[in-house]
Image 1 (cartoon, rainbow, N blue to C red):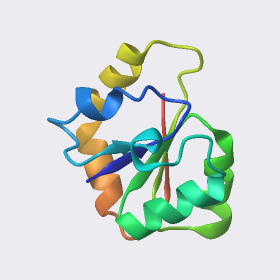
Image 2 (cartoon, one colour; image 1 turned 180 degrees about the horizontal axis):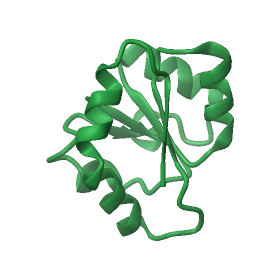
Image 3 (cartoon, rainbow, N blue to C red; image 1 turned 30 degrees about the vertical axis):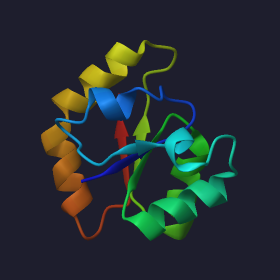
Image 4 (cartoon, rainbow, N blue to C red; image 1 turned 180 degrees about the vertical axis):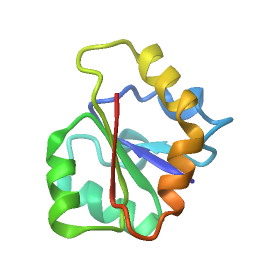
Amino acid sequence: MRLLFDENLSAGLPRKLADCYPGSVHVRDVGLRSAQDGDVWAYAVSNGLAIVSKDADFRQRSYVCGFPPKVIWIRLGNCSTRAIEDLLRSRSTQIAAFCADEVQSFLALG
């Protein structure tokens, strides 16, 4: 399960979480810094990635468009990168099940 971290999350998260989510990337790593949501969405679809974001726009898009890609919405508000890292580590089993699910398109964590 590979993740695409949105711009509103730390660019260091893919490296910090490489043991749990190998092959994950940040939008900055793939030339999508300041990209439109539609471009991020298309990249995730083309590359088999689940989008991780704090942006409610991706939540809305997942309701309208379904998947792929899957969307993981972080609902922690203003918090440290460490808090997000801890959340994603502690929920790795839940995230794996979500990514494998053939029906769900959206997962809220927080």
